[in-house]
Length: 88
Image 1 (cartoon, rainbow, N blue to C red):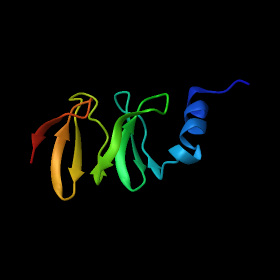
Image 2 (spheres, rainbow, N blue to C red; image 1 turned 90 degrees about the vertical axis):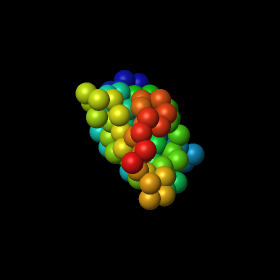
Image 3 (cartoon, helix red, strand yellow; image 1 turned 90 degrees about the horizontal axis):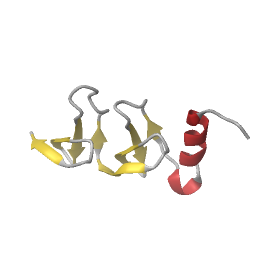
C-alpha cells in the first residue's frame, strides 16, 4: 500500500479522465501539463491549479513566480493563480 508522493501523483493523473499528454518537472510547486491539446498547471496532488486553456506554456520561474503562456499566438505572463499580469 506504500508508495512515494510522485507515484501517487502519477497514478492520479493517469486516470482516463485526467490523462495528460505531457508533463514537466515541478517548479515553484507547479508543474506544466498538456491535457487535451492545451496547457495548464497541476499541484503536487495532481489537481489542476490552473485549468488547461493555453496553446503554449512554460514552467514557472522559481524566483519571479511567473510563467509565459500563449493564447493562440499572443504571449502573456501569468502569476501563480493564473491571473494575467502582463501582455507582450
